Amino acid sequence: MNIKRMISLILSVSALLCFVSCSGEPAATEPATDDTATTTTEEPTTTEEETTEAVTTEEITTEAPDTTPDTVYAGLESGIVRDGTPRKYFCLCFDDTTQQDLKIIEMCKKYNYYDVTFFISTGLYGADWSSFVGVPHVRFTKKEIQSGIYDGFDLAIHTYRHMALDQQTEKTVISEVKTDQKNIYKLTGIYPVVMAWPGGDPNINRNLMKIVYENTTVGLGRGTTSTHKFDLPKELLWLQPTAEISEATLVSDFQRFLDAECTEDMLFFCWGHGYELDIYNSYDKLENFIKMVAEAEGIERVTVSEFYQLFKDQIPSYIEEN
Image 1: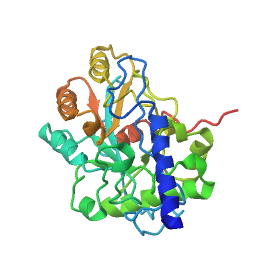
Image 2 (image 1 turned 90 degrees about the horizontal axis):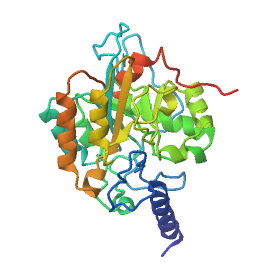
Image 3 (image 1 turned 30 degrees about the vertical axis):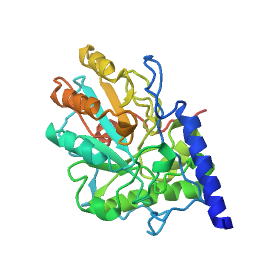
């Protein structure tokens, strides 16, 4: 075995160990049933040294995409006018743009539900992380995405190479966000304004939030720790979700949301990965949940980008600590 292959093997094993330790439970087990339990199923992040044959050769940049007065910004077409009336908002999103998204999209279209956000890492087109997670985890190639897989849905930032940003220089953090943003803009013609932090909460800190806030045009970043609550976030760059698609309490949480008296704006924020459907054999469970959400009355179904645009003037993206 040559040195390069040995290093690659060591890095792969390290990433797998990181995944197991961050997820907190074996991939083959069912999620905890305790309402206060959290699910963090983020797959391994990459490092500067790691490479994959599938990684795109598109130029990495620290420059923001060029915009014009005619630039179309994501999330401005919700059709919702905030007039002071309290509303219940619902967001659903999925990370990684893996092959399982085809079935998710099929489910959503079946129930005419397009208010869904998919987070993409454009530096990992076609990357295969199946060996890390134990089930198929193959990202779409650029050509596949250009074929229109996500047409009609919201496509947003998961950073260029899905790196553990807390281990990177400020310059790398900025380039990871801006390069992905620029590539999505080129890919869709729509300027993305929200992101999902790669690696989840173990790889997020306030310094990273400040870097993104001061150096990019991204205004919302999603974390991974379930709150099981319906409060609006205090700041948008570390928005914690209500629930994760593989949690046993997902449906009961959503029913509580539907039954709750709405005296002020409320948010149910749901997230997950397509590969979880293979881990837990939960395709039917997800379809039933999507049907439930699509047919629910008294809620506003919005993409993550639409939620940001609706609340960006009310909720700060980042609060400087004293």
